[in-house]
Length: 103
Image (cartoon, rainbow, N blue to C red; front, side, top):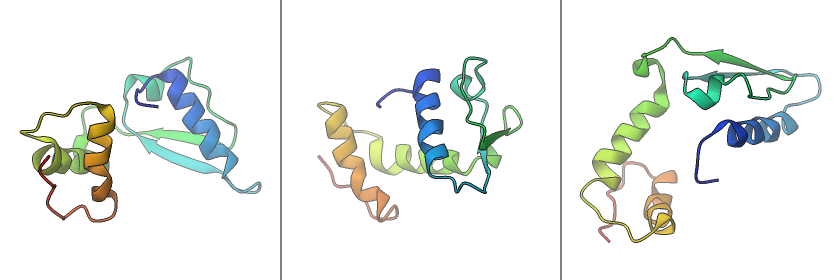
């Protein structure tokens, strides 16, 4: 899904829950994005959400990844479509330090 909302997060949690062993419980550490903390969010019984403190991006490692991507992979470029952005970023999954290919 190319969007983030409560419905998408509910589906994401359901998929994670399917992969948690029967005798296990998952704890997911999340920032307090609206869709992470919505009262309408359906959290499976085998998952607990542990929210990070508000306004603490330094505790969220994914923030470092987004900053790196913006600086090295997404800035100063014009993309034709969503698919073009995804294709441009795919190599980063395997080697984030590699320079981005210019379009």
